[in-house]
Amino acid sequence: MTEQLSGLVDDRALLGRTSTAERVADILRSRIAEGYFPPGTRLSEDSIGGALGVSRNTLREAFRLLTHERLLVHELNRGVFVRVLTVEDVEDIYRTRRLVECAVVRGLGEPPYALGALADVVEQGRAAAREGDWKGVGTANIHFHRELVALAASERTDELMRSVFAELRLAFHVVDEPRRLHEPYIARNVAILQALQAGDREQAEQLLAAYLDVSLERVVEVYRRRVGEDAPGG
Image 1: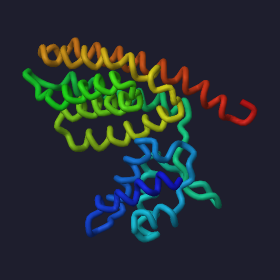
Image 2 (image 1 turned 120 degrees about the horizontal axis):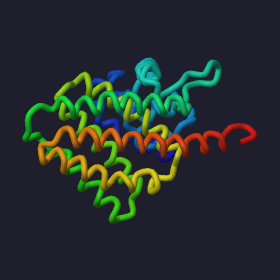
Image 3 (image 1 turned 45 degrees about the vertical axis):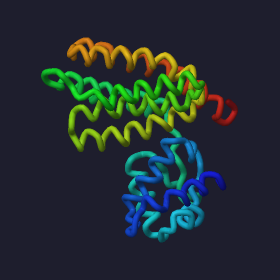
């Protein structure tokens, strides 16, 4: 926990002069998504509040917001923990992704599309792979889908999917096989980008739907095994 708290001390500057619960929640959400607080970790009010320099009430409100987003869970007489997803949670996350991401691509309108940010994260993923940084590839992959959703230019859609992608990272941290999980999708991201660059929304949507179906199958297969291994008697 010491390393995690050290990172939070560095995050104090992000709070500015007013340490609102929303800003604290933003920091904790990012840290959870990045794996600083793995699923099942108990979050200490005293330690985190001290590291961020915020009041207990502000921190509790931030915890409440993240509990509403299904990233945290409050256990009576035990405290607040980073949530451990069920297999059903993972399947639901992918259903949501398929509904939203495919609809975004389908509704893009006439080309050309603003694909600069999407192309940048594709290159980030390739660069991370060349360095053998498979967690970095996973981060770039999430950013690819975030930028894909951003093509809709909808703040509400961005906010919805921000929480969905943060939940997805909880599953990735449990699976903990980053190369197997993320390497196959570097080429798939390139193919989707190229279809959009060519102005072919239909092809891009078909590639995306197939991508999400394969990803769901792969993640659930490994996740079910890992959760089973960690269960009592597993």
